[in-house]
Length: 170
Image 1 (cartoon, helix red, strand yellow):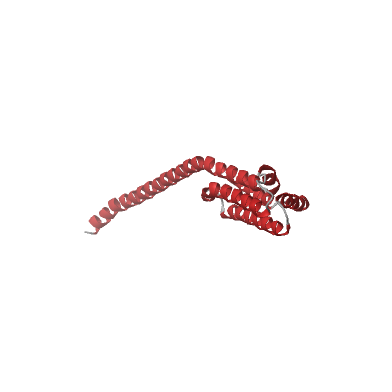
Image 2 (image 1 turned 90 degrees about the vertical axis):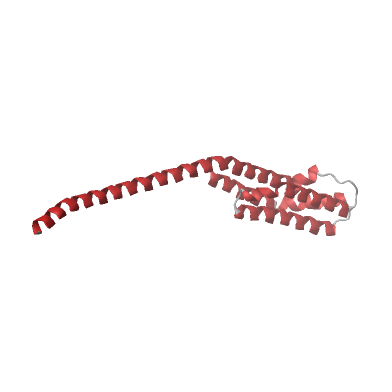
């Protein structure tokens, strides 16, 4: 009886060890295959989303350039001498540009988006502030140009955030 038990163990033990090794190797192989598939999907997703993200950065850079006060004042000519009319025209121009590019926030980082919002709000506030002390549309233009000749427009800060994001993406 003991001989049969030892003989059974002699057959079962190598089979159990072989089964355990086979299970371990097969499990490792499957894990490696899953990892490779996940990596391939991630690379494919990244490859497909990169152009969209870069296009969003391009559009937001263009937005910042278009709301740059100096460039905007050269592009948007007053329709009358009334300061309030011109201010409303400028603010409407900024809002229109912003609404046109609003969806781009999906593709850029929150930090970059917040810098763009801050630049837009700073420009709007500065325009309103200068409009309060201006007597005509042309004086508003002159005062804004004078103010921004002394300081860097907030859009430049937002543009640097956008450039940093592009460097990070690439």
